[in-house]
Length: 271
Length: 255
Ligand SMILES: Nc1ncnc2c1ncn2[C@@H]1O[C@H](COP(=O)(O)OP(=O)(O)OP(=O)(O)O)[C@@H](O)[C@H]1O
Ligand SMILES: [Mg+2]
Image (cartoon, rainbow over all chains, first blue to last red; front, side, top):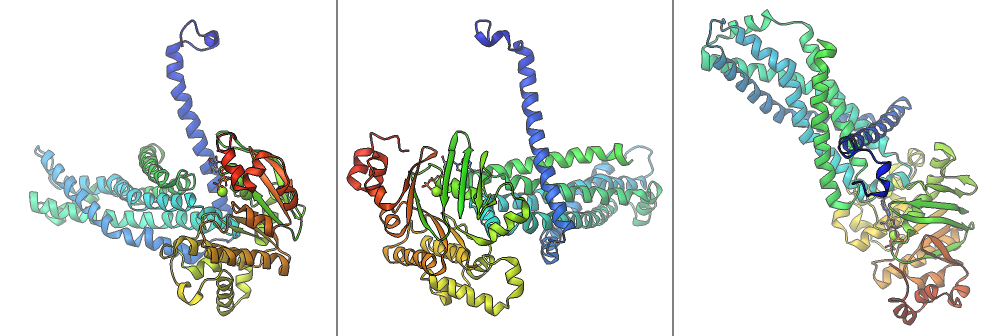
């Protein structure tokens, strides 16, 4: 890296190289993943257009991803409602009418907390599980074995999980919204004495009919992102049990980051 | 017929550097080679489980890697693959695992009773007691049992070609004999083409029509068992007799 290096005349100045090398590495990694995900989705799309995906398996995955997640989603959303309500109450010491709390709680739950918290919970509950499951199948050659007996893991494993995510997540977000708002409402009543009617009066005051759709649309987007990334990461696992562990951790980071990025893109795109 | 044409595959470093090999229809062919030379990789290229960087594999003159999806699907249907570590589907029980060995189209034509009969038959062929294990999960089986269930899954669909990745490694002598007899039976009675990767050189020489030695990414030897025994290549000799193997430990670059 110094002047005596024979290759230094072609190398870039050190500071520039130090900046560009990681940028290039990241760009390369992003491009590789994007390309592989595009191919995965193309194959999934093809499986659907050729009617080669089992409806029963989709239903089974909706049950696993959706129904089995309902309790944890309710608990999370409920806690989010309680926290939002209390925090709002703490900040509402001035001359703002108390019923505005109804709007604050409802809007933060529906627009942000409901979809995002549900997605984050599902990353841990469903995404990590999919990556670990497919990763184990990959390193123990079960994926190869599927191909060898003429079955397509994309059709059998990937396609049903992705559609099931797209179906289940918006429904879970709906449930999260409902329980988040209810928890917020009761908390407001208990801690500030805000009546339920005033709460709903406030909630309606700033409510746009578009808001719920926006919330569910986030659910659809996250429901697509989680299984897609989880499957992609699972299928590129290598290196035995340790590889599965590492890949699952990375997959969780990848999913979480993508969810937050997609979430940040929603306001400029849809509001 | 299986034909490897200049198969080249590198991971971090080259593993296969241009393998040419032709296994004739109905032939029993054994492939020997030191651990880690790419025998399993070569077998996997036969079903496009691994895609070579250069070269191609042809099954009955149909290209595996350039023939398109339909061709590959037909090839996978007529080729059975016995994995080195069984590779059973661990969420399915033994019966369901063997059932997966039948092509989807075949399954649609059969009643569940016929499928059960076939699975039963396949298990008996590998010297397993069907009644005892049909409903067990792979995790409940011993290593050697898993291996034989893997063989049952590969043969249940009556493939024309069988790829065996060390089918007898880790089996006791009686079961080794049973599997060897099965391989011979399949090839003699049903004219199945068998490509057998094995470390059991003695067994391989006895059973097979021709044998080859993969070493350093290439075929170091290819010929009849007689020629193998009389070869003056030290690596071949090391595989052929124990004394030469000891002599070779420090001399040869066999990883
Ligand atoms: N998916 C993979 N990714 C990276 N390297 C691989 C992969 N598969 C195989 N290799 C490498 O290729 C080489 C050959 O592996 P292979 O499993 O074919 O050996 P083998 O001849 O079957 O050995 P053994 O007799 O021990 O089974 C090894 O060095 C291995 O590290
Ligand atoms: Mg091997």
